[in-house]
Length: 147
Image (cartoon, rainbow, N blue to C red; front, side, top):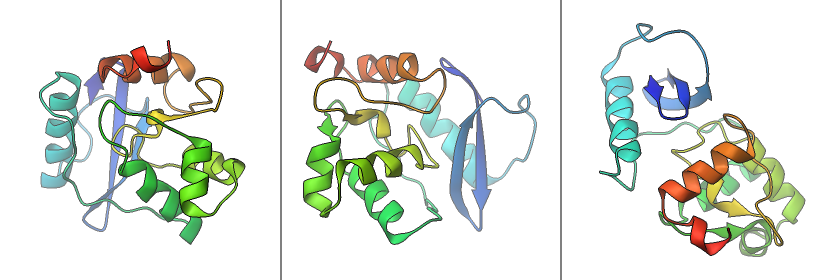
């Protein structure tokens, strides 16, 4: 799907959304009810008409990866947490949380852009990196918290 951050490619596996990647092929690929629903919800998010996603998600990976993704998904729209905040809540190291963020297969839907470093933005592996993270935080009105 085209979006304000470039072309996004959505993947469905076993009836659940399993990946969101930047780039990919031009629109016109697989078309399923779930992918149409996910596209509509992303368009509403980008248009400022929606703050949450209601989609079946599939997170392949370790129990740690799944726990990190669940903790990220619980961060409300427009709010942020630090890697340390999530690490304390999950009983992990901040580095493990950072690796979990980097392994998030569904950025935006699982809003890893809301996870910050103790003294700054931290990283972001989607889109154009930090520029994309800043755009998403500003879109949600969270930028005033850090920039």
